[in-house]
Image (cartoon, rainbow, N blue to C red; front, side, top):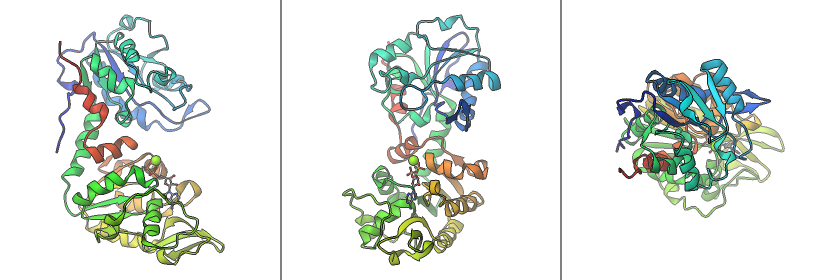
Length: 376
Ligand code: ADP
Ligand code: MG
């Protein structure tokens, strides 16, 4: 299964055209400084491509989710470190006056509430500013927001280079080399259950760690103490009855005697399972050794509370295998960021929720929408 995209590289002349370029420049900012420029770097190939072809580029992005944050630090960063840039909040200003090959950027789209509520009038206001729409905001393309799904109803619309690369690389997961190992961790099983169901058919082995494992332990009737579990009424019998699934055999708990490792079925009522244990990690590594394709989403433990050893050890191990490795998820990336091994995986997705939705459904609303414009 491979979806075909309308590629911006198929457009013959972009010179002098105003391109509305939707990016995800929602980078973490601390006291006005950009903490991590991963998303800015990931957006550069399309910016460069459009510049070389002498388009006038108007960047559209959001930052934060309260609708009050400013993209001004990002504009400064782009302007100083990368490219001269005009930063403006005024939709009525004429972008056509900027020279070919130059950039401008609008203020945080979410400052206008019509972006998130997906009001067509906002898409129309944006569309008036340009000739062509390019979506390169993969990590926002699972959202039904005006700049993602409505704008492409109005303008000729294309996918940017990052979206192309995400779709190409993530689609490989649907026709993987075997043995295919899917490693799943993190929390909130209801956001991942569709993925688990889908990959029960595709993967050869599925390891479940993180807080997801707690929920499965509980369904199995194990004591899980005060651990984080999802109590929703999700039927997990298909996991319990299939030996394709691997659960941690031991866990790291925080309890009355401090942090200790216990067998998964010997947890006490006062214990909090916060990580997998070393035996489980060893077992998982053996499966990694024999895999030819590995998809990994979700940390093995509560890394924010310092339970990061197993996740980091696993990340380094996976990064060194000969297997093809695809890794993604907002917290997954955050948990292994400091290891500087991102370039050692075959592919690291820029999407969190977008990656999960793409893997579960094979496409995203923002990708589908690129085909929405009625030809006139
Ligand atoms: P991603 O964003 O990579 O898809 P998730 O959002 O699903 O990952 O999950 C990440 C969260 O899961 C982190 O906040 C982490 O602390 C939490 N987590 C993982 N294992 C545990 C655990 N055993 N107990 C509590 N929280 C956990
Ligand atoms: Mg997350």
